[in-house]
Amino acid sequence: MRVLVVGAGATGGYFGARLAEAGRDITFLVRPARAETLAAEGLKVKSPIGDIHIPAPKTLTAADLAAGKGEGFDLVLLSCKAYDLDSALDDVAPAVGPSTAVLPILNGLRHLDVLDTRFGAERVLGGSCAIVSTLGPAGEVRQMNELHTLTYGERDGSRSERILAVEALMEGVRFQPKLSETILIEMWEKWVFLATLAGSTCLMRATIGDIVAAPGGLAFINGLYDECIAIAAASGQTPREKPVRNGRGILTAEGSAFTASMLRDIEGRARIEADHIVGDLIARSPDESACPLLRQAYTHLKAYENRRGREQA
Image (cartoon, rainbow, N blue to C red; front, side, top):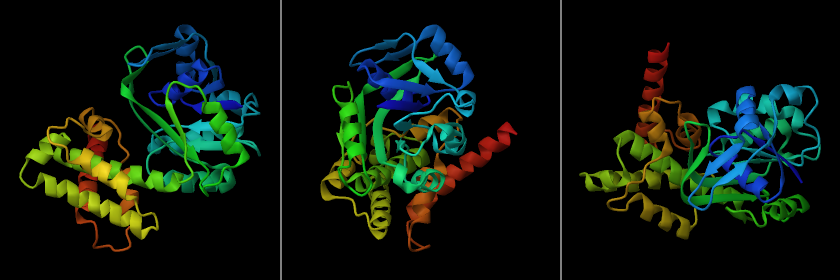
């Protein structure tokens, strides 16, 4: 199976490197400057479970694909920030042929509608990942802890020939792959958890432990989580009891240093996925007067975006 990994950053670079480490046929779609760095230095991953160095990873640029150099890919592993999705799809489109499957591992669900419109729903799998990683100063991927799961599946829950081929691709890799027959509900469960985590820690500019220890903090987090769960249920994707119980435990743990990566982005004055993670969830609420806590968090995130845009103008 020939795989095109979109990007060689903190997420795509990590999972692509692990697949290449296992001997899979992996090509990275990268910008010209990143291609030069990878050609000179290789792709390096620093990880608590074992470092990787791919001396000469295969790469293509958007110009290469436009020139017809990227045909014959069986799978596109799509990892990018939501605000880069449109440009990423423009770049990768020439590589998506009649039999190519697209496996997105973005947050939320809005990207599924975009991908369905662009490539056809029959080509788009469901997927999600969980990893804490970043790019180091020399362009190396740094995995911050041992969390590294990648979940994938057909959106109708079937065990199709192509999803079994993806399962075979994942055998023996040094991360935690999972073929799911309930991928959509798992994507929803992750989304409501992430929206709660991002909404609370960004609004309060604090860790989960700091919020829980503050007057009204525990009630705020529980209320925000309940609002997000209610939206999922109204959309026909009621989160299951065990994931909700586990999620609530993480979101309300005393002394926890846990925060959303979105908070780290805000503190670094970077772009954020406010609309994809929080705004789109609000848009799916059946009642305009519902989810007041989530709307408060969204107002805060959009105010940050407005300020950032003004200061950079």
